[in-house]
Image (tube, rainbow, N blue to C red; front, side):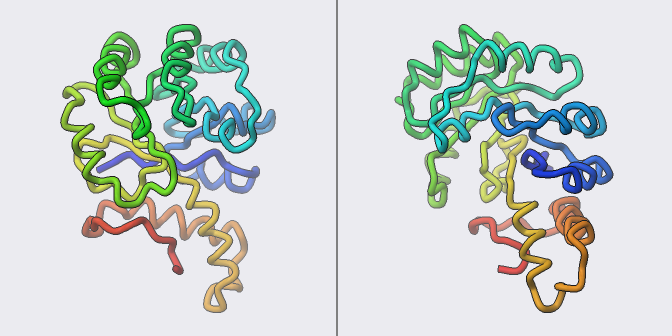
Length: 228
């Protein structure tokens, strides 16, 4: 079953739900907070560190590579892996430069030239043996490209699909991440049938959904929310 990393918890209640559920958690350098690092990081069962490249894309604030590298390397002994700083806008030369200067596992994007994948695979093999797969939104309808890419990735490399929950049915994908879990909890509290639930109880329902993903038949449709 694909390992599903919950996106960075937005507040202490969500961090508590993640730690109690023993589910994997993605922690982004671009969105982390002192209270999360001090009180909750060590309580998470599995942790994937993200540079915050998507936050950089949305905000325009450039990531401090040295600061991120130091932050990630301090936690390296007890996390699953940590991602390099990739340029989601499509500047693959900057991505390669960041991987070489600051470390972290590389990501191949749908905007990158096809021939770049060989270099990305070589970097993955010489490092953490993880590779990220990234697509610019909207990500729907990209399964053919994704399968062609995955066919070229050798066995023994862990493949993480950034925000690729809708493609979790593809066997070659080892893990994905999503922030739908906390958005869905708000939808639950707004639904007339479940509006009596507390925010914490709504989070418990969302967590149970992720824990039971392996019991349901995989589909090739886009990921939907719980009450959509």
